[in-house]
Image 1 (cartoon, rainbow, N blue to C red):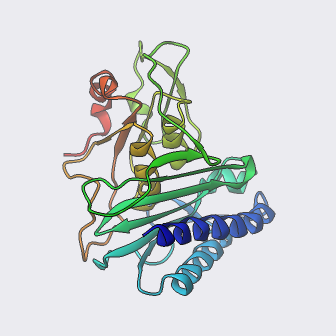
Image 2: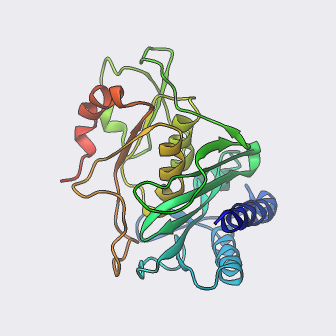
Image 3: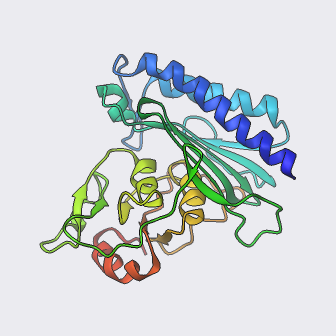
Length: 270
């Protein structure tokens, strides 16, 4: 399958680069409207979503597609792409240069390839994760094509942990690390994969926020902890993921799960 994975990687790189160049022209120049779930959307989100869906349909016509701005129901196809065309819309509309384009490829409902491009800072993460599948697939996690691995450090006041706007209730006196809030779900988690932070939490992410980073984090050696009663993957055929939050904690190594997971009680969903 080497030729297939080369095609997948080249497609992800070419598509996100092309879309990212156009989005840089929109950044800080568009107004957002509020969707039913409270998140923001702009004409740039909708344009990028359509552009990526069209590119997938042209290059992988037999594959399914889920995207934040269009199709939310998993049809159960063997191969399926999941798109977040613009993660960090609030940053994007305010001209804050941290936002990205996230795409993932799922096999039998579970991500096996993830690619996240952040045009304003020229950072691109990608990775492969075979998991329990029988696929012949490359391995590894990469930042700008260089291998990355999560940190082996222990928490101190000089290490970072990322929160989202809906997870500030976990902050308590004596929290093991300094807190950061970046405003981009994918970057919160990918900072763990690259070793920049020791952990991160997102209280209400959707499947398009998580699919690509799920691959990269595990390939980088980090630990994924679902804070709901059901595992994040595999996806369920026929399920509408448009209003289905997937609260998640990630940490850089297994030994940090008992350090941080007890602090997450305010946002755990049973």
